[in-house]
Amino acid sequence: MARKRTLFVCNECGGNAARWSGKCPHCGEWNTMVEEVLVKLPGKPLSKELISHPVPLTEIPEVSGERLKTGIEELDRVLGGGVLKGSVNLIGGEPGIGKSTLMLQLSSELACRGEKVLYATGEESPEQVAHRARRINSVQENVIVLAATDLDTVLNNLVNSDCSTVVVDSIQTLYSADLSSAPGSVSQVRHCTSELIRVCKTRCLTAFIVGHVTKSGSLAGPKVLEHLVDSVIYFEGDGDRLYRLLRAAKNRFGSTNELGVFEMTKEGLKSVSEVSAYFLRRDDAHRSGTVITAVMEGTRPFLVEVQALTSTTRYGYPQRSINGMDSRRLPMLLAVLEKRCGMDLGNQDVYVNIAGGASLTDPGADLGVCLAVASSRLEKPVREGITVSSEIGLGGELRPVTHFDLRLREVLSLGFSGLAGASEDAANAGSGAEGFSSLIDSIGNLLSSRKEKGGNWL
Image 1 (cartoon, helix red, strand yellow):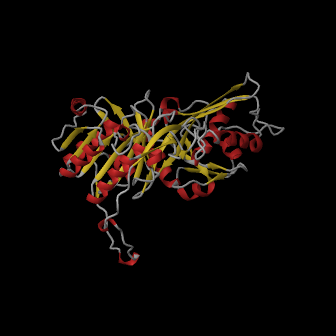
Image 2 (image 1 turned 120 degrees about the vertical axis):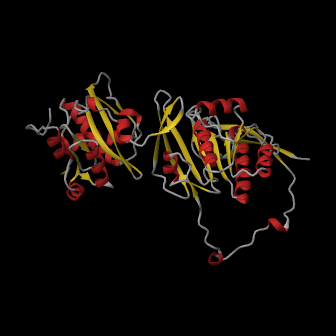
Image 3 (image 1 turned 180 degrees about the horizontal axis):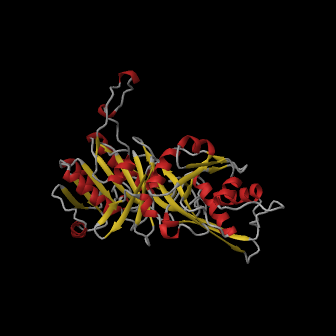
């Protein structure tokens, strides 16, 4: 008879404990431990065919993977030039962000290229999937829709058909009768994914697995599956905006620094190739507190608008808020402005926003943030036509950024007069580049301001 055992499993990291606690002992997250009843089935003897034998590394033949273009430009960019045949890819994101629409468009594009796709959906009926496909013009004969939540049903249809690609939407709806836990739990999600990977790897099938992630962490999201799959792609965005961002958190066959940008329309998701034009508004570029910054995401340069607002605080402690960058970066940059540039910000609330909803990780945005704050504090706009890009050290020095020449080329192609940054890279970039060695020099030249007596700007 099967033995039952109760465990408490973390929805965030998958760690388990014998007793419930408010804080996960493994990852430190709060209110993520849920109770699961596990049934231990009697073990089966291992057959000789399933026993693996070690092979010397020198005797393993070299196999070159074949990349398949998906027909979606931004998705191919994030995947490293196309999807590798036989790979298992995890698409994560919040519910309603557009994952199902992207997967349906992907299935249609692959079907146009001769691939046969099994679209397994556990959230929608076949009629609902067909209605969305007609709306976004993605109806193809080689896309087979299977409405099922049982893992064995999906695997049987996959094995008995001649499909080369499978899309599972979503992994939280699948369940296996081998486990007694509810669908969407950590054990069910992990077991179903492992079985899908086993079948796909043995038959060289390409798989796309959709996983939901909620802000509260109430569902078992892709975090517990990242080590199982070949690539992990997160679909980001705001429901109030039309844009969607695609980032790779893991990619065994390519870079994880690429960024894909989509626009959500009634006809589906459309790739955005001119990212700078999408995030910029040229009519308000010559205002105080506004600075155009050139950043890099992987191999793609684009321009974003950094906005800052300073106002006299009415609280005991001044407010510090930034949207679109790491919140820990702003206090450090403000400390550099106060210590190295003599700018008094102790009684000022400081708010910084990356316009357009972009999310930046490039340290080259440091100079843009500092200039935007200084411009708002001094009520003086940055010189017209100038963009900036440079990292700032704690000593107030400007540090070079990668691919300065590519940033300058993007700046000049959009009609700006030049790019200001670290003097070393600017000297090697050629015409249109303006170099500075310190933050205080860049503020004084770009804002047409000079230090007053006493070491203070105001």
